[in-house]
Length: 170
Image 1 (cartoon, rainbow, N blue to C red):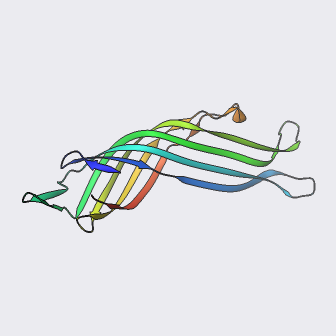
Image 2 (cartoon, one colour; image 1 turned 90 degrees about the horizontal axis):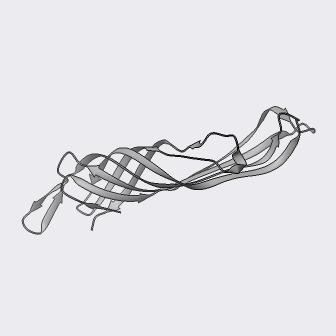
Image 3 (cartoon, rainbow, N blue to C red; image 1 turned 90 degrees about the vertical axis):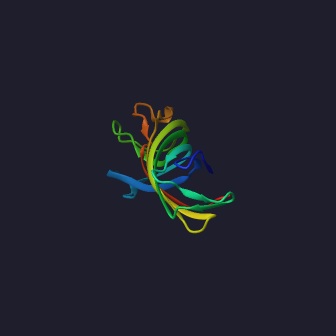
């Protein structure tokens, strides 16, 4: 959701969701029967953000009192911030390296953390009411892990995001 502040600035609010699940196994150890010691890692992120976009060119022109004609291509840069919800979990079989005991466990850490980002993108107007958008964004965020992960550094939630979509102008 967004709105123009002037012919060169817009404020955009957004919500994203990403999720990944990966299976892995211990490289150095196996079960007594020779089976791998396997784990599953799940990770999801849901940032809610606000972005101030700067368009170096005019985004369109008024023709008369009632008609507005958008510029076909509108590149922009921007920045902003918000809050990010993350959910990180690992479950399966693990090896205690000091005793070599193999055990089952489920570990989980989730929570909210602040996030900041910079972005660059382009709006491509298809009609006066419909446009497509592409954006590359770098986000910064990190969070302390729960007690399940005692002794570990905070989780780094930073990284590049590539966003795109179809938008409708009202």
